Length: 182
Length: 338
Image 1 (cartoon, rainbow over the protein chains, first blue to last red):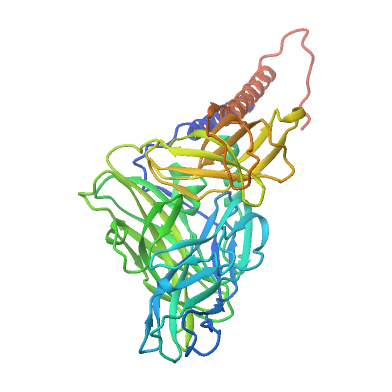
Image 2: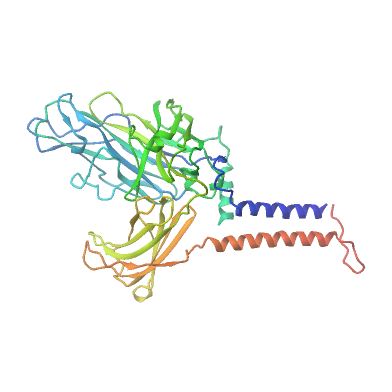
């Protein structure tokens, strides 16, 4: 009995080892296993950010600035894979009469990015309006998280400014940006 | 290493889901619910959709989205195009066409998540039978559109699973990268910086992480490890600088700088002797890097672990066999304890 048990134990061990060592063929893509945990999330208040800086009239050449909502990235994937938060100018700023292109906008992250866990989260040189990231219709990296070890989170509040063109008319402007975390 | 990863996977997979599941993380969350078995040891394949398939293959992946906010959330789900550029993985906006947007579809395409709610969705890839051999990039995107009311700047909030889909006949192209050179530089703030030029020499995109150590410095001083900063992703054939910013107090050198980088289960290490220039915002000459064995060599612990296990199994077997052999005169007499 014990002999059989022992032999079985050896066989199981060896089989376990060989299954680890002999990787299945690359064509076995339909075979999957179930994952648990490992989520990543982003939170940001849904309300639109108001831009201030005075009345539009007479302010040609200046810009309106405002803060987007406090953005929290929560990475519970438990690995060493970094993440990025990117920003895109999605919809031009319009009051119904004047349309200000998204390329007139800049984004930056003032102040310190507060983090939990082991992560280095940085907005690079996009720290002030002067050195801000000029938006385009394509996603560009605003915040990069590197040196990740395990679960981590980062909280930052991007600012945005819109340069006012000389032909701007008075009114309430609306526009949209897209923040993407991946 | 394989063994260690295997053990770690078991530990990660064991906790039950369902009733005891913690509340979802704040805001809009996403997670992959399944990964290919043949990539069980690759962490990237557990958080991104990574696979190698033949043209014409149809396959699915399940994922979950969650709402950790107090308000209900209307979420739109769609596949997006993506590119790997300047060391970064860019998931493009809704409506930008690419191979992945043509091949992939997600059900459901919209869903309402209650506060604290979770929902499952499935992305189906129908790879074009005529697709040329390449690696294709995309995103499985969950988007909370900006509020439609009021003036100001609305924010479309998106969270995405990256898709790295290698398409072609046969097995997967090998992944590899090389550190071409290292050089010392000094940031405008005065902080010394090490810049490594890393080239992706393999057939798949890489997500690099790693650290840098300095040794053999003035007076035999060592320093580090320092984390390396880089754009997160290096495309096929692309070269990208990988930088590590060090502390201001470090002497100018010369130092033996050694960088170790990882992508998935692949590790490469290289070293070169460099000095930091005096002038702020200046850079020293690049020094060709010599490849070294990774410090936490992956193969050595595996060999030891496997050897030890096999030896243990053998010893146990021999011992039990020895106990079961017919007793001979002069042998010590054992009695069964039970």
